[in-house]
Image (cartoon, rainbow, N blue to C red; front, side, top):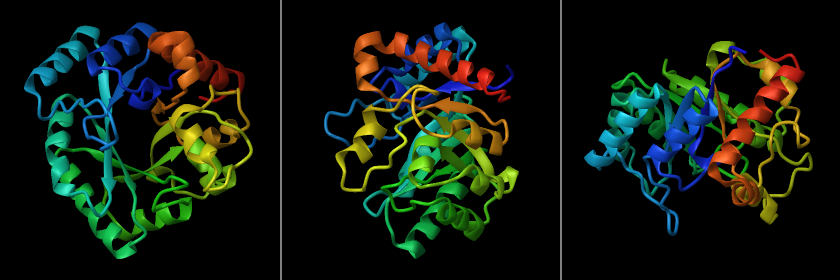
Amino acid sequence: MNRKFSLAYLTIPGTDPVKQIDIATEVGYDYVSLRPIPMHLPNEPLFQFDKDIGLFRKIEEALKKNNIRLLDIELARVRKDLKVEDYESAFSAGAELGATDVISSVWTDDKAYYYNEFAKICDLAAKYDLRVNLEFVTYSGITTLEEAVNLLNGVQRPNAHLLIDTLHAHRSKVSPKDLEKIEQSKFGLIHLCDGPKPIPGLDDPEMIGVAREGRLYPGDGGIDLKGMLKAMPTNPISIELPNSKEMKNRGALGHARQCLIKARQYLAENDIE
């Protein structure tokens, strides 16, 4: 199988980046995806390697020792209480470590504002040869595939691409036919996981609860992963699959391993390159 896989931070959240690199290498991932940009959540562990030279050097050494690459960094959000300029140090440090991509999302419905700020993120990322992957989330400021594509078309930045998270796409009622209509060059990274087929309402705790700690291994849920993956190019897949029960039962290493086993098995069984 030629498809490349990355271990996303949120799959084993709270794991030290060096440990995440070691786990990804032991399990057999091709890349890691790290989170140096804080989410400003309660009791959130901070791994700001752009501001901690000691941590930066440890990550640099771990990547080299394990012969594994950093794929992307996250999460450059557009939100009115956050300054885009504050992301530059993370972009710079990520690029120095070999990252090629950054993930971004929008958390305001002020269209004029988010068009302007997202364009600024793209321009800032371009200074470091980073691609920007726009993710639409069912409960965010940009909730649909159409809105995301409109933003990409509106800013017209060559490094702006579309990230498809299979859970969020399913919950936003994106069909494989919808994806087939998108120009292939617009697609960027893919976040892979499975999840329940029923789509909860925005006020249902399951909407955020499943996304943050109840995603399922590929093939164990009701999402049309086969249709989605076949409609997109064979870009790298970052397995973003937080599941608190599996983490507790298997540990970070065991959960990361099972994610990759199930992903590879699903692609093989469904004749997906």
